[in-house]
Length: 79
Image (cartoon, rainbow, N blue to C red; front, side, top):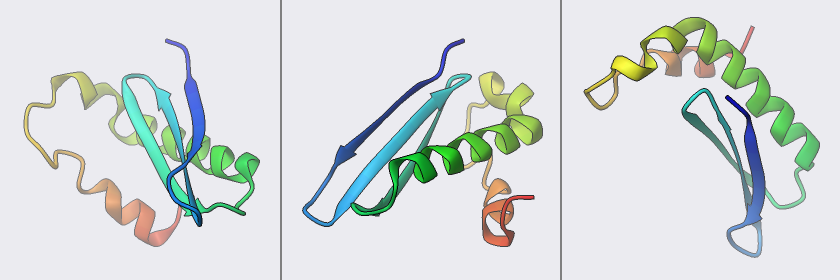
């Protein structure tokens, strides 16, 4: 499965970057001056950590908020 990524400006002051890997979409919204390379580096790291923790469960999920526990990883910071 390939990785798709793009960045687009959502307002005068913010930009969104998204990254699609293994049937999951990762999104970051940041100030438009935030470097594109750093945004995608963060999303790449985030996707790897998510795949390690939950990757095998993605296709079987049927309920919203199935991965809410991953928020703790974001709150504490990625390893």
